[in-house]
Length: 326
Length: 198
Image (cartoon, rainbow over all chains, first blue to last red; front, side, top):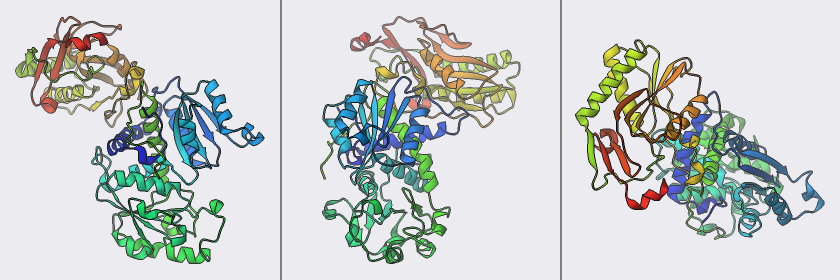
């Protein structure tokens, strides 16, 4: 029995739709005077963050607190990790404290998988981003935002994203968000196109369930949603494009390019945005840009995932495959 | 619905016999509507909240009847209690149903909870907890189509469609046109395999 959420590729279509539907109900809690549910009372969740994060950590923390879980925050800075403690020892320390779930972000791809499958701990493991591998809750909140905007809040219940054309633009090579989104959007029936300079596409991209293009302008008119990815300087140890200016001229989204998108199409960004690089301020501040909405939806999605994994005596989410196929 | 007791029961147990038919259910709801108006002295501040699934349909029907009697639109909504259940840890998580509170809220109003079957009372306890997080009603009352007894908590209904003395080995199944295509209340024998769950 799988009790973890490691990769978006593990989710079946029905699981994903169940998570989105549950998130739709969780979102309504945010409109109430008391934004709290007793569902996870007495459960302890550790947010184990080995890598910097603002929105993901705060979002998980808000979700955990809204479900009444006890929350322990752990960041590598200032912990024994900086003294040289291994992941295994950290995990066993947490296990000894009786933790029910671990939300982990790690710079090394596969760390959450290792934590979940090594027998070090009994707790459920939720991947909050590992290296350049996966970030499943981000993909879920993106799919949730798309379904709300492109299908409708109520009309979307029980529906997937079949037939929707989604374009992801930018640094695919270093992006766990892109990997998770391609997997999940494919499962949900959407047609995904990646647009990036050839140097920022990973080896083996032809085996991904998506199209690849080097030309943003010809793809925009055929997109229902365009997701701009951040150029991840901190993970770049080589020159991937000549200059920033050339990158943003060819792959940045400005007002003119946005005007070429269909009327109903939305602009998405997983954050943090680098204004002037992949997106101009004009686009970032327009009402077609869903960045702020994505953050709000992130809390609902994480509440749904936590409820479905921890709310009962066993998880409601079934998994088809085990991870690490790619 | 009182899913707490029979979560995935047969839609129609083989030897189930009807105890209420469509005309009975209509008459019962009309009577309850009149009782609500009588006890609330005009039903000025009544808000009806149905407990999903079938309680919501019953609440809507009651609202229509109340509107006929009082010539006023009665606010009606739904209250999902899934995340307040006391047996959450005993089953896999359930899909959530919709909680829809009418626009003016419930603060200072008379909330009438509506459900199909009253059994252990645990669903209603969860509903009271859920209400607590939404607002502070002036009072809370309970209307049920069938009271089958066997309470496990000190809870009683204010408006009862039919008192149905049952044994724990029997099942009570409410079917409503909106969900099941017809109106009826069936009393049947519990399949042996499920008896252990009680």
